[in-house]
Image (tube, rainbow, N blue to C red; front, side, top):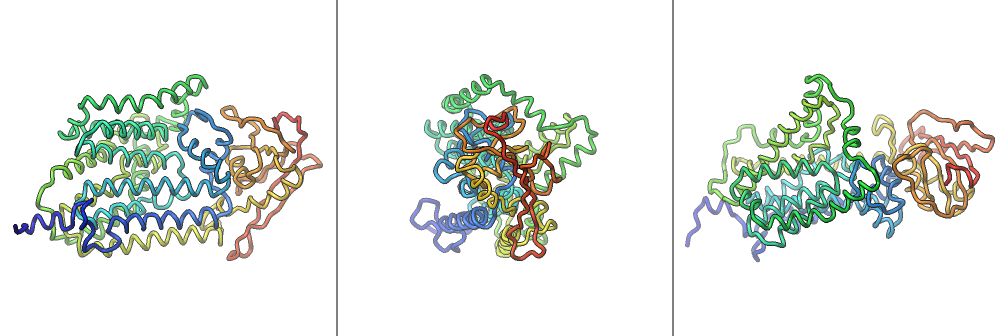
Length: 514
């Protein structure tokens, strides 16, 4: 039997799972090659975070402070799944930088691997499947900000990709096991970050608009999904009630001031949207759209792939419209680019699925991947440069390059092997704990969480940890206050930067030390 050219264009390689899968493909487009490249990207960034950088970043610091104990809920602003993972990991590898590097890049690797599996269900050509997952690095929140900030969001994007992949699998071949798995992903997503609820709501609407997915939702086995998700969420809800943690009030505080004019709100919306989608959208547009004649377009329809593609399109369009209406109605300008994770994480998969239908991509794909590689190398170079040359023009406060670990000898010599350290804020406390793993850290005024007491060999108050903020004297500065000036380890920068810290021993019975 002779295969038609159109059918051959649609399926140029063997289906996944066959013995011929990947035959004739470049190494970077084969499944093993894609996984290897994703893993290498994660490994290189993890090495920078664990070895070259000398301190943890601000978002990591908050979680570092919170996970001094295992709690059902820590603060109402964020659910606790990320903290549970971090707490468990730190029992094995300690509370230093390594724990944050391992967790961050394990989550990013899992997200990328799941997005790749989604791409294989939505896109026919393996080269475009690979390009879609590599393009996550061109979403600036993933490709750059994820190395500096983002904690709970990394759990959420894993759950988004996992839930979408499981739903596609349900439509393809439904089973009770898959419905239960979807419930598990929903639980992980909602226990990871509350923003997952927005993704879930839009996903349901998008599925109702697509016949095959609508049938999956009205299947009686969806009750199994609800039951699996309900158990851990009910336990968490009970913990919120018993701890008197008000999620609604915390969310309102996060949203911030409201009743701004519609022009300021729309401007903040556009800035956040552009901040998330660039440079990916611009890069795809500049490389693939000009003078595109549509050669090699996908002409044979595939109902399964087309259904998934339309669901992704609905998620993106409905999500953007709902977000715009919501922020205009609330009048808030506090919209961050990373909030668009919930609707735009799978944007590269959708864009390359459409590009496959449009055609004209084969000759241009190498140029696109070359630019993408240059972008990735550039981000790696910047991360390497920060600890070597922490110039404020490059990295501002450059918190990842501050040599906090050089406080450890002074603290341990003065206070013994199990000190209690008092600071002014969560960021300072968490960064100190990562730099001095032996310490218990507490905050002068912390109404929401305080780490449990433990036997202590000494206590001291330390200020000046948040580098770049105004130099603050202790009130009042006692005669026993030690002022420390420490030169940064920046071999390529001359003159060097300095940090000014203050160390004041406190009596063991001081209320701050309890």
